Figure (cartoon, rainbow, N blue to C red):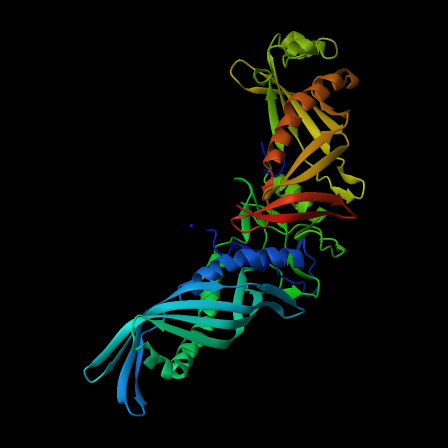
Length: 482
């Protein structure tokens, strides 16, 4: 039965920005809207700096050498080698919103410590030792442009990058002749400064293109729910940023995996107010939920077959012809003590409504009853129409949206009978009992499994809260790195 929705840590935080970073164009409204606030950007920035710092610590500094001339001493040669970055301190990184343009990574007042070896030679005079290099006032500004390709996948590019170094200081040790190096330290410091300067932005650009972009491309635009349905989370347009948040607008549409046809409705407009108290918020429209029902209905899986073998031995009712004696005695006499089979289905689409009071729908169901002969063939008995009211409670858990359905009492209508008319009221207790004990638990089992939200690997939601609004649900939450 299918009734309801059923080493990659690196850069996952920045990938979240790309996932939620899409904008609306033309006349297409999204079925799913996601926003990340400045609070969310701050979280993303801190998480991303861990990986960027690793890349910066791995800066490879080539050996370099040169000639020098000192008055009274003449010419000599020097060489700096075996250089390694021992520390790259980033005190206050920020990811800022650039309205209409994207995001800006900003690092100021960073510092770098480098150690290595040096040696000097002039004729037969030689000296060598260790050195410590301190680079202060390092700043990096890089603009990140978020987009989408024709398939709806995310693209991320580093459009510009600029770095600056305020000062470089070198300290040598290990030889009584170390003072010679100090005589031309400015030349050395300038050379090292240029080397580091060129490499910083190269590393930032490479991290975006070689690490972040490939990671983002592995994120599917289609999220599998089960063997029957998937969700289309493709992006509708390039990114959009405001001075308060980064907004993403996704198609947000379930579809039957056997046929991705159009849903005969359009998403509603979702008026979401900015809220910086949470890291992210997601607007989930009634369109999103209704495409789920449509997909399962299109796949003809909104049905369940009940037989007596599925009921507990101590069940209040049993599915056999004996209990038909009171209203269909002809059937009970013709097929004594034989099994009954009930096929419960939802042949008609029931529109789910989202209002401030909650989620509700009025499903129209059918029950077809059959006698099961000893050879397993079926004899059709009657067709019942069933109407009821239902409500749906929705919650977020980690990276999934889960739910629970509650059904009101079913009202029955006899639509067809092969053995004469009868009072359907005599069946109401039986059908309501079976729905509450057999059908509804299976529906809620599927709903508790839930379906995936558009989050990157390694990111989960915490402190989540859901509000019902007109035509959509608003999910607000903070982020957690697993």
